[in-house]
Length: 354
Image (cartoon, rainbow, N blue to C red):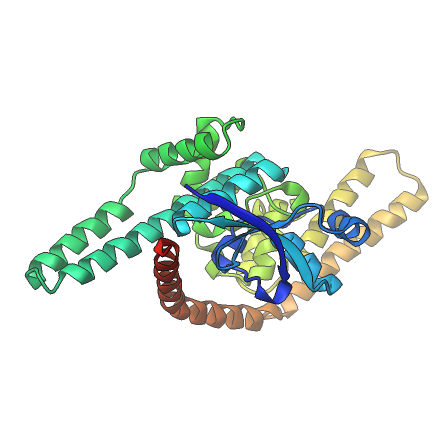
């Protein structure tokens, strides 16, 4: 169990960020208010770190301190047993302090469960490496294969149970129904790229319910691989923008986007123009209204004409570059995991020393 050691002031240069912890927590929507408070009152809450001065809680405050040029900040130091316990600390602090939506909470709990699973996989691999000198090579390979298969072949029911157990342990006051968790896990299984858009709608994200509706729509249209067919900026507009989601329902516009003959922003403008035209036809029309109708119709036709003249829109090159960057990132992932694994091992050794 984590043990509190002390609160001291340390140089900000000695404090370290841990990417795998930082990425767990969604952006703070009270950033400017917190920055103003720190400017006026200083640090009321110290940053939480482990014995290596790695941040467990307080990434937003740390970023603000860097921006304000603060040289020393207060930290509370905890002695931990390793990465798994630290993940619990990261989760519990943020689930208690931050006003997170239920959708954000489910996503955080699930990411923590995934990271714990990765840690167990690393531990299993290390154990097998230590044993391979004393065991028959074939038996060792078979054993490792079975263990890895058991880890990866978790049923949705089992994953749901794990999320509920983590919720009960880390956020006992939060009540989330089974159906919401089921929908989240279904999205994660069939269209994993959509999970990154789940969160607080006030932060340009979508809730699990909307994400599930989008999943069903894409499944019906056989477009679960949409992330591989259009650039990420275009994809984000389709998913997070309410008018973009209307485009998803329009086969005619969506096909033009998939054929790289129309940008999402053009499709959105076309829908807005058509809706405005429909509204104008429903009300009593004056001469000015009729003239406006003609202008709107010309605008809609003009947009369609522009689309047909262009073979490709300018985001294709950006999409290709994004694909290359993603491939490069995936190639670096094993090295990063190995680095984290070595760091975790060295931490455990340092903590076990008196």
